[in-house]
Structure formats: C-alpha cells, structure tokens
Length: 565
Image (cartoon, rainbow, N blue to C red; front, top):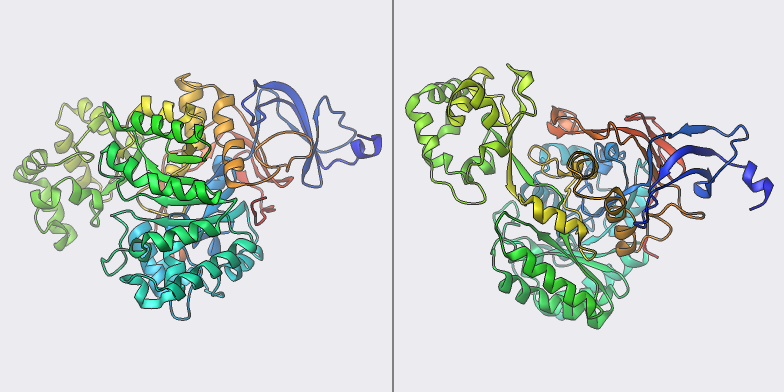
C-alpha cells in the first residue's frame, strides 16, 4: 500500500485485540478504515487520523443476524433498535414466509393481520407505520433503500406474501394452477434479480392467519415449492418445518429429505428452523448427526439454532399464550373476562393460588421456577432479573403464592419471562460448536411483548465466553460473522482483513452484557414492546461509520441494502 493511501484514512481503531471472524486466535493489531473499507490491519501510524482507543477490547467484525422479522419495523425505525445495540450490523428479513411485500392492491390488511397473529406485531402499530408505497418485492426493497438505515438489510422473498400477491384469496386454501406457479416463479426471479437472498417459507403447524386458517404457504404442494426452490439456484432458501413440535427425529428427517433433495438438484443452499435442545432429549443429537452426513455428501444444509433458551412473557393484565398453555385458564376460568379489580380479588384468594399450584401443565410449559425471571415488578424494582424460585425462597413461600401476592402488589403490572424451549445448556454449546448449524432465531421485530432473543450476541459473549468459560471467543465470533456471511452469500463481510467492508465492533470484554428487559411504549400509536439493550460496546461501525459509541447511538447511519454475491 502506498504512503499516500496510508495517510488517507478516515478512522483508526488502535491497540485492540483483533478477533477476525475466521476462527483464528485473537491477535493485537490496529485496524485502519478508509471509504468504508478496511485498508490496514497491523501496526498503523495514526498521522492525525481520528482514533478509537481499543486497548483491552475485542475488535470483531459486525455481527450478522440471519433471522429477523424487521420487515415492518424498518418502515418506522430504520435503526432496527435494539438489535443495533447488540453489535449487529447486518440483518436478514422476510423469514418463514412472512413480510410486507409483495402485496397486491388491497392486500395490506391481510398481510399485517397475519403478522399480528403469527409474529405478534400489533396491527395497531403496523397499519400506522407501514405505508405500502409498493406492490412488488423489488419496489419494497427500493423503498427501504431510501430510508436512513442504521444496519445493512438483506431479505428473503416471503412465500405467503408471494402466494397472496399472485393468487389473492385463493392462496388461503387452494393448490396453485400451473399458470399461478409460473407467475410466482416469475415474481420470485424478479426479486432475486433485484437483490433478494432467496425464498423463505413455512409448513409450521402454529402458523395461522387472522382467520385461524393455515397461512398461504402451508397450502403449497410439492410441485409449487420445488419450482420456487429451483428458481433460487446458487442462493439460499429457508423453511420453518412442519414437524418442529413432534419431538420425533425420524419424522423430522423424513420431512427434511425432500427439501435436501430439491436443494441438491438445483444447487441451492438450505436453512431450516427451528432446531431446539431440551435437557435429556435425544432428538437434537440425531438431527446433528444426520445433518453432518448430508453436508459431507455435498449439499449445504444449516439448521437454525438458538444459543439461549426461547422465552415467552407471562403477564396478568391481558391474556397470553403461556397463561393458557400452563393450564391456568382452566385453573382460573374466565379470569380475563373480569375487570382489574375482579382479577386482583381472585388472586388474593387462597383457593385460586391452590388451583394454580395444582394446574395440569405439560412440557414445554411445566413450571421450572428457577427459570422464571422477573422482568418488571413495579412495586419492587429490585426484583428485576431475579428468578421466581429465589425470590420466593427468601420469603419462605411457595413460588406461586409469592407470584400471586406480587401481582396484586403490582396492580397486575408484573411481567415474568418463562423459558419454554431450548433449555439444554449442553445442547446450546453443541449447536454453537457444530460447523453446519446457523445461529439465528433472534426474531428481532417480532413477538414484541414476549421475546427478546435478539440479545443472543451479547449473551454468548457475556455468559458463555466470559462468565462460564464454555466457549472460545474466536469460535463464537466466527459463528455470528463469517459463517452467516458465507451462507447468505454476502461478499466482503464477516471478516477483518484488508479490503473487507468496515462493519466492526469494539467490545470491552470486562463489561459486555445485557441490561434487563424494560417496557417501552414507542411503537406507532404508543403500543408497548419489550426493549433489552446490550452494553460494553465501545463502538459499532457500519460501512466505516460509527453508529454506536459507548452503548449509545451516535445518530450517524450508513446502512445499505445487501445482495448475495
């Protein structure tokens, strides 16, 4: 590199510990940035260039979140908060076949109502915040490209939206005709030409629309799905599987085999979701072994896994899925039909507390009180982050009795996070170590009052690397940088090397962690969402621009639309 180019630098990260994304051992180095790219890695003279002092800090590639539902949120919040506060510099949208494009004239309400049911994104907010200044996927992509994006955005073409775009109401219950298949393939090809990653679809039995019917993608026959997969040659497709709740490895493998065969014959990479690990469960080791064999056979298959438990929110001010699933609707019949005073009165009754203690619940919702965590307890803020088991033990009471008393004291405002899936720590570590899985399932933008799994990058660094010492930082960083970049087909990202895009994080390993979840009423119309930020991020840099400094947004945004190479 010439002396002239060495002096023409926009920023130098000095004295850091470079974790370069490849899995190699960390090494001390400076990193110089010019025109949005890394131009030097090593001993760099400053020469008056602005400096980020990184002594003692990890310098990593920016993290890539390959499974979000930010399709709607990016319309009113192009910073993608709070995902951007966890070191994420690039996201993928359109997962599981759900999104806001393509959209036929008059189809916006159906798409948004479906997002409300499947992804728990309130229609009260989306109908205010999503302008639908588009019909095709490429038009939606062009709309996003005009927004002040705080992160880089790539996207799958959502199958249910695509089907509804082509078939209208017929998409909600009928098999496509040959002409409709051809029209879907044509629109998919147009989207791919405009930069889409590939196709995303769902067979998931829990995926129903606002009418309670299966979402459109679940009515696609194999001929339709196979034709759409073939159109993605050289790219990636994603499917949410039908057998995800079966706990039957043979059934899951039987479902996967046709998808793998289509992928092999068309030269397409496959990622599927979700793969969870429960304590004492023999399913996930069988699936990992099967997946290793298929990848060794020449086809790229990446199950999507989570490095932390999947959680839901228990609350008493309005009905929730977890309240019903634990059998509490039966234990407290018509509980939510009464007013607040009536609910509080019932929770005070010893008979009600006894009914909740004895409620018949089944896995994965059976009570594990040392995994129930207080998110908010207005009358006792100090409970935030404490487990129900620990809090109850201090008072000498049964956890349910303690919880009922706390809910009464909080005037129904208590929020409790409950782990309902992926609770095996051994499984989570194995998932991260396996080279053929994809760390994902953060669901950023969705389940706005029940899930904060988007925090997983900060969790892995703070909990699995620093606190428990179960994983090496180089491995963890590789699995959320280079590995997803290659699978998604994003060139020059996910690594620290000369010539790579300057998406970077400067992270203090002594302080990296996660704040407790809080409720913020900042969705359009004032609707609430859980908001859980990360900390320990001295800087997050997107395309050479510092977007986060000392855990706070700088107001500078430089996100771009991404296309696969």
